[in-house]
Image (cartoon, rainbow, N blue to C red; front, side, top):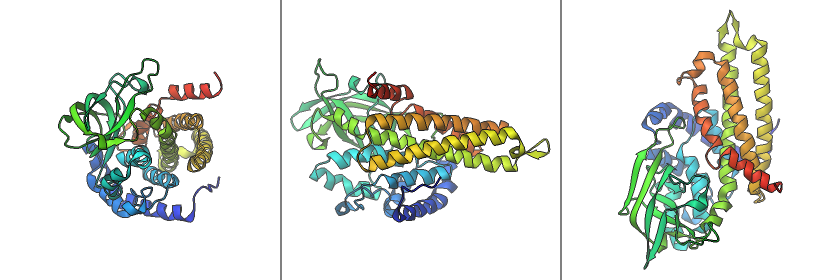
Length: 382
């Protein structure tokens, strides 16, 4: 079906991204997978093209366009080439919104030019070894000491933590036995602060170019000037950005499901079995027809939600519905597509294998499918 959520400006941006991915990403992608990260130069190239500064105000080197559809185009074009842009997505879609919403004037002057130029890389540290989706259970703590906070604790599964210059750490600054959600604060830890160390680089099943690390904080002195927003208000801040964070996963899921379909259609037309193209068998036609119908449905739901998000009307429950549906569609699509590759689908040299392993985490991060169901059930009064 025809999509009508993009303007001519979005399509011009799409061509810019498509050219960049083809020239600067695809030829090097395998090397980056083996290295386990994107090089910093990629961020700087994207910064020079204006990609990283789209939502940042013009006075700091950005474009001042608060339009999530540009983020959608970026993800779609990466998926179209069967690659991901690693922690670029995390920086733009997950971390940057906190800076845009809660940074004060001095913080904007300090950090925004570097963020727009791709010279400052970011990460957000929420998850702890014993705390996943339960953010109210965070134990990393920060105690006020004059004009600093003394930060202690550990975080895990931190996307982009290896190269991050600025890490937004969710820490507990007070305890309220009657309200577990109260007392959380956002502190920006800068690379090089004494007591801040990076631990293991975790070896993941998929999304190899997206580094994921453990972080530790031992008596790190974080200036009060590095606090984002008000002390104790972080739980509300985190909840405010969750719809976009979950939409980001859904956008990637649908784009990658479409890439799996396109890749498989091309393959089955060329692959010969028993003297005939795999595409000639009824089972192949039925399987791919079913995948195409599901992906089309997911795209329609997603596009509606994108417009709701741009208009500031997407609820947390609706974002949960979209993430749940789109990630489950992705899982079914890549599995059915891989099956049509036969044994070759299990080989990592074929793009369907990358799409398959990359897909699995979509039903886990930014809230598991089970958590999405809890949120949706609550919206039904259950």
